[in-house]
Length: 125
Image 1 (spheres, one colour):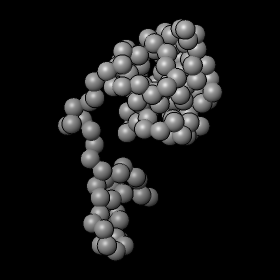
Image 2 (tube, rainbow, N blue to C red; image 1 turned 30 degrees about the vertical axis):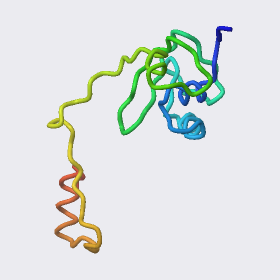
Image 3 (cartoon, rainbow, N blue to C red; image 1 turned 180 degrees about the vertical axis):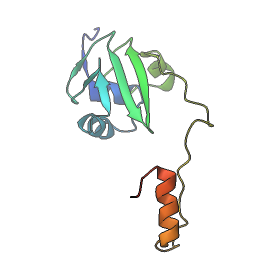
Image 4 (tube, rainbow, N blue to C red; image 1 turned 180 degrees about the horizontal axis):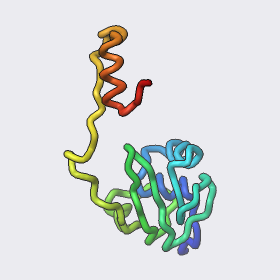
């Protein structure tokens, strides 16, 4: 029996985009999953040929559905269920490093606060 549609949360969990189905549902509720450019609800029907965008770690993963599954499948079978159209990540040089203070260093001094604001691009008048 061939499926004609599947829920977004169950498909994304089945092809191993999320560890648990509840994590997939939570991601849908938070707006991190889009189907054909629109925010997807967890129970939205997904069909073959749909474009699914999943936001994780600050980057979008773009997948085209090629096979529908509703149960979790092995990694080899999961890779056959979609076509990955994700653009390559930017080079490490282009990714801005976020300055972090040492844990337990206390509150920043006025001078340190000004340096932090300058790094973040805040303008002080």
